[in-house]
Image (spheres, each protein chain N blue to C red):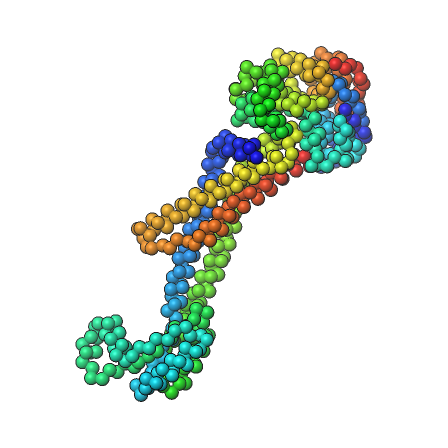
Amino acid sequence: MEFVFRETLASLHRSPLLTGLSISMISLALYILGLFALTVHNFYLVLEEMEERVQVVAYIRDAATPEDIANLRQILISAPEVAEVTLVTKAEALQKATRELPEFKDIFSNLGDNPLPASLEIQLRPDSRTPERSQSVVISISSHPMVEGVESGQEWVETFFALSRIAGAASLLFGVAFSVASSLIIASVVRIGVLARRQEIEIMQLVGAKDRFILYPFLAEGALTGLTGGILGIFLTYVTARLMTQYVFTVTWIPASWILIGMISTLTLGIITSGVSVQRHLKEICP
Amino acid sequence: MIKFTSVTKRYSEPEPALKDVTFNLEAGQFSFMTGHSGSGKSTVLKLAHMAERPTLGDIFVNGFSSKRTARRDIWKLRRQVGFIFQDFRLLPNRTVLENIAFVLEVINTPSKEIKERSRILLNKVQLEAKSDRMIEDLSGGEQQQVAIGRALAGNPVLLLADEPTGNLDTESTKNIMDLFWSINQSGTTVLMATHDLNLIQDHPQARLLELHSGKLINDSGIKASY
């Protein structure tokens, strides 16, 4: 074990250029992947925020009594698609209109009767925020005698879901492409490192080293290079996120689980590529 | 020590590199193996070191059979055999001492003995004074001395040398040959591939194996044991 540690550190120290190049390439590969993850994560946060706006509004006839409204509300709350129902009274509707449309303030203040209807704002459960399920809520309440009209923004919901699907497919496609490209870069860099020390492997085998004795320092080196490159790549992504938040717009940092996956991947890839390359050399030297 | 029985080695070329080669090298012998480039000298050494396996026939090296020794057990043979190359194949970014110590470490020598044994080996190859020099600062002859020291690290019973004087001047060649003879005198079997006829003529005591186009065309038999 002592030999493995000593050889690993000595080897990294002996070829600083190659070590530096390997770590830089791995960190660059992970930086690109990190930037992509950052973009996808923030894009999905925006989508989530937009998704929360998917709601159905039922306008209530002026003739409806408080009991009718309470009854209608009860029917809606018991529906499986509905998460929350908020009553907006006629007075609240007018207040809201005055607040949101200040240019019509004079008209609103000179009205004799409040023409705006009371309404029930229906928030859907997260799994029911689809065009089909919001439409089913609309159908179920449209026929209610106390409902004057229903607004669901169906067109917007459909556009939003089309956008979500495109974003999902694009991030999956680019995610796979970036991951494959990064993996290839990391694997190539580690292989070059092993290739540069082919003679060392040959000499070790020549003088009677067991395969695992040759292999372990390379595995440790692959792991260390992969891990260092990974940490550096994530650090660069973090600095970029901070700078963007400071100078451009607020960027939310990626979840810890994503970072963990990135680190484990570079570590594993470093070890596996080192192992495979060394094994291949060993078999070439001594079939 | 080395027994080749009807050994044929075929690579991708239509003509085999070795054709039906049979010889038996006794323990303690010093043998030259000669022949033109491509005659099969290096192939014989690679086979004896089990870096290659024969296509036909069988090879025994100090009790290890090429047919029955598994790849995972070859290290056991390698620790009994020293191998020397024409191009030395030393680790360039290490000192003379580190090149020797590295091998001792590989063969599981206890840490506290490594330095002392490295010094003894360097003394044997007359390079103790240059133990802290980097390999690239040495002359060709000195580098070959280090390579010999490295090959001796595991106290081998057999020393295989592939054109060890091929890159050296006359003076260095003489020093290296003296070193080989003294190693042989201490009981180590030596098989040296060379195409240097002057070297062979200067050492008529040694056994001579001559290869031509993969065939053993001349075996002078046991002439002397040092």
